[in-house]
Image (cartoon, rainbow, N blue to C red; front, side):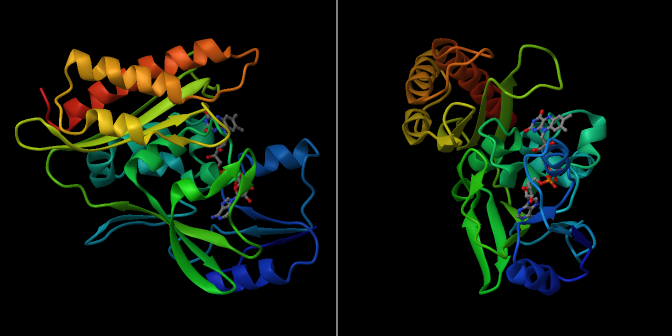
Length: 286
Ligand SMILES: Cc1cc2nc3c(=O)[nH]c(=O)nc-3n(C[C@H](O)[C@H](O)[C@H](O)COP(=O)(O)OP(=O)(O)OC[C@H]3O[C@@H](n4cnc5c(N)ncnc54)[C@H](O)[C@@H]3O)c2cc1C
């Protein structure tokens, strides 16, 4: 096995593109190393991206935030402006594993590991986040929800690396939130989860909404009907009831020892209501 730590994205992409055997990108390693130790993957080439320029930076731009692909989740929680603008994304990242895991793991790794239960992904999808992808044929910017295509699978081609996640600048009266259900208080993966992002007008009417459910299908579900049920309304009891019904109905979960289909459907609706209430309050709604 060959391990390299390139200093430029061009070198990293070049090495991945010409790799003959299995190759892997190493960010925090909290998924990759576990899978290697378990014998599930045996890369011949490991490309550590942590030394690439800009990969470990969070930059505030005129359009919003650029989060480098090697920024550990713990660092997201220390960035005051990011936390203020996107508290839901940050709270989702800060639910991953433990403090030790958060010192290494990244939201890009969470996205590219493509687990249906990944915590940061519903929050990123609700936020309308974009991924900047660099590859042998140049760069492209894509919606994060197009990255995972199924459990453990992504749309990234050979040689492609996500270099950053982009989050928009926030307008006034905006709020997002994320919650998951786990049977204990931490160090567990979501049985079901929800991320919601809202903007309101100055009377508290919801202007825009994005509702995403995790662990409810092979990939995160962006529930457009749920967003439609919120837009043009305040968050009264009737709206919350409709939201829960739509979210429960949209789920296509598995049935396993961690939760039955019926349980996951029910909890998706309950979580969506609670997450919507927090996002609404954060946006200044009363
Ligand atoms: C003890 C423990 C607890 C955990 N708890 C949780 C939890 O509560 N919630 C949760 O969601 N996850 C959890 N995880 C899983 C893991 O920590 C997360 O998925 C984490 O965010 C992965 O990030 P990473 O940087 O460590 O990824 P890595 O392990 O470095 O990479 C993960 C995958 O993504 C690919 N990859 C990484 N970066 C890029 C890139 N820039 N471009 C393209 N591909 C890339 C890698 O090749 C690999 O296939 C836990 C893991 C452990 C070990």
